[in-house]
Length: 268
Image (cartoon, helix red, strand yellow):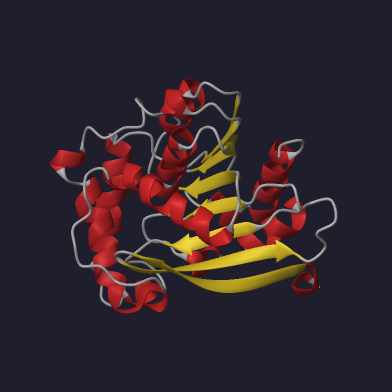
């Protein structure tokens, strides 16, 4: 059984703005895996550790690596916040969170994987800490704000206006659910955010990159993965996942696990 192969632990990490909630999944058989860098998982705009579901444990089991996921401040089981996201919040996540995670968990080098906005954050992790990042994996990441991105957000905004729609977010974020939703919608639909992109930071990524994107992603065309894979300066592999939408790790979990592990073979 999986729980015999993987040991999961919960953690609280102190920051100046409040506590972060984190989880770690560690293969119980360490032989031959102690020198492998951990995989950091960065969640999407409405996400949290719990919404990764079985994916982190499966990834740890099949990759033989420690997997670490955390809730950003304001999300999941991390402490609440009531401020407005700054326009550089994607870049700031790398600057503030990686040192905290590295100090707490004690790793020297890392692999980073991010979903959706977490993918943009992962790009910044890999760029800002290029000397210690062994690999970058993005899944359904946005590289810019395009019309399709805005259209997907407007549709989601309308869906969340339906009675009871916010309840499913409350299951994961509790009283923070309204803040989580507004932070997503208001930021990405803001005219001040319209020119955001990863174009300037991508060339600073020197490590190998795996860029995953669903064929039918409702929040972005293939322009996003093509730009990410095309502008990084390290070797990049691009996969457009047939039949997938915005959450391939849930829609095609086995395929994503296999592809990520294949990519990581031979990397530290």
